[in-house]
Length: 215
Ligand SMILES: N[C@@H](CCC(=O)N[C@@H](CS)C(=O)NCC(=O)O)C(=O)O
Image (cartoon, rainbow, N blue to C red):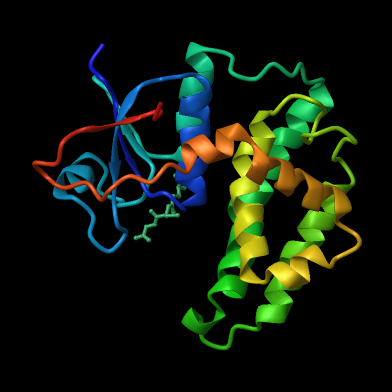
């Protein structure tokens, strides 16, 4: 099999979740770190919508992060947690809520200066409501559904990380999201997180290939 090419951007939450799935499955890729304001022509030729991550395989291009995770899951079961039906439904439900509502409000909170008339506090409270709702389903163990990292953890934690970064003091002082805070700390302290946040130089035609996972 030809080595897949992964166009990625280190801090992009969608690229982070895709890298976690690829890392857990130990699928070797040629990684091409990009800048969002300087997208390579080869990436745009493969995926004209111009978002990362983009995974280029021998026979197809996958340019949606959830599809990359599901492609990995079709090859190998990277998650050791056996979820019941309710947890499977909650996983898909929360991924949707984060990709749609949470992300919408997160952008308007974090980058309120980019949006006309955006009320940052309102958008923060909309995100916070979602976190309160998540708080209710988080286990007392390390991850959302117990001691094993799951699909929901890798899919939404990169967004919660961004939400915290917008105002760390405020986030850390909220007393109603203790489990969310602990979950995020576990994530930031994990070996997996450190591995997927390895620094790569920006890719350009002629660059020496760089590989992911980085050992
Ligand atoms: N639905 C896409 C969203 C990916 C996405 O929006 N990525 C952002 C970076 S975090 C992006 O590439 N934006 C394009 C740009 O800013 O030009 C996915 O899940 O892969």
